[in-house]
Amino acid sequence: MTAFCSGAVPGVASKTTAAGDGGATYDIAFAGAGLAALSLAVRLIGLPDPPRIILIDPRTEFPHDRTWCHWQLHQTPFDPAITHRWPQWTVRSSTVATTRRGVHTPYVRIPSGQFYKVATEKLSVAPQVTFLRGVSVDKIENHPDHTTLHLSGGQAISSAWTFDNRPPESSHAPWRQIFRGLELHSPEADLDSGTVTLMDFQSANSDGIRFFYVLPLDQKTALVEDTWVAPRGNDPRFSDEEILTYAHTHLASVPWQIRHREDGNLPMGFRPSAVNRKNRIIPWGTAGGAVRASSGYAFSRIQRASETMTHYWSQHRRPDPAVAHESQLLAWMDRVFLRVMERHPERVPEFFLRMFDRVPPEALVRFLESEPRPADILRVMRALPAAPFLASALP
Ligand SMILES: Cc1cc2nc3c(=O)[nH]c(=O)nc-3n(C[C@H](O)[C@H](O)[C@H](O)COP(=O)(O)OP(=O)(O)OC[C@H]3O[C@@H](n4cnc5c(N)ncnc54)[C@H](O)[C@@H]3O)c2cc1C
Image 1 (cartoon, helix red, strand yellow):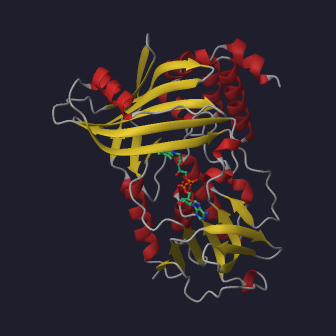
Image 2 (image 1 turned 45 degrees about the vertical axis):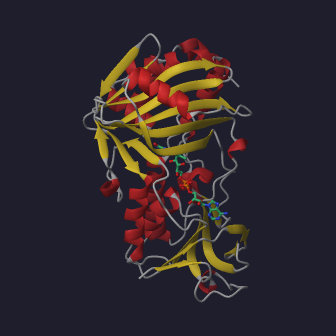
Image 3 (image 1 turned 120 degrees about the vertical axis):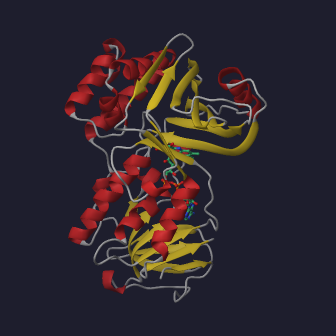
């Protein structure tokens, strides 16, 4: 059974030395037990000869603190945590709206609390896993044959490899997606619970791009998010009143109660340092560049990287840091998109409306989920106006 503990690690001294892969106490350490660490750990314990794993996180509780949505192209071990599937989505500006359907690729919701429950239940029956809560990783050292993690309690542990899942400084990214979401409930509401509003654009200028995002959870409840895509240095201020005003105006003019809130500040265009296959510390999740630069989505990319990394480990019993890195073509397209956004922020609503309107839903979903076929990329390129993108494609 997994050792779930808070504070000291059983059997680990205050100073540890390791003589090599074989001498390290663990095969894999996770600094941080968030989405990316748990996604990989759950897959690794399913291998016939699973590695010895330690997960270390300052949190002692793993409650519902965020809502993960994505278009479901594949099954994952976390499907039991899916609570909602929407076949239809809308994007709108003040003048135009487009609604598309994708019954084979629904937009799905996983509340983080459900995800953590599924993940920790799976890990709790794995004897080779230690889960250390209430402890931070202060420093990680890379050595030729192992890594050393220095913990907040003064202990040190050795692991052959470390996946560093600690959040990077979001100020290092050129753009950030910053948002506040409120789950609103009213017994008097009568919402259309079959359609998600992905983007309802409010404004777009050099301060950033602002839109509302609405997930109708049932006819009486919705998660309503006020979202800014803002350049570095711009910190939009949020107020519950503005979100409530939006709900009154656009959802239903009824008294809304706030049931839950979540805040986010995601780096867009954050690039991890170049892959060094000799380095035993592997940036993982957001720190490894998992957040898509052009959209802020990360869930599916983390699932795919975890799948590939597990396969690699099963073949070679070591990780390949390159698997977390995305295709050069998509990374380049996203860089061009961010450049166009910087030069023409006022046109961003038009770009998204064109994409959702002109590209068939399945093709666009594959593109947004970072799994495009060559024809999908051509369709997206054809949907966008050529002049600003060609001008920004040149360095
Ligand atoms: C509110 C919110 C909503 C989001 N919604 C979506 C969505 O709908 N779809 C989507 O695709 N993406 C979404 N994202 C983006 C992305 O999927 C998440 O940020 C996701 O949690 C990233 O996973 P991660 O493992 O990189 O980071 P996290 O899940 O944040 O994990 C990082 C872990 O590191 C731990 N940690 C911090 N400091 C230390 C330390 N010193 N030592 C050890 N551990 C440490 C933290 O406690 C945490 O558990 C959302 C993000 C937020 C914040």
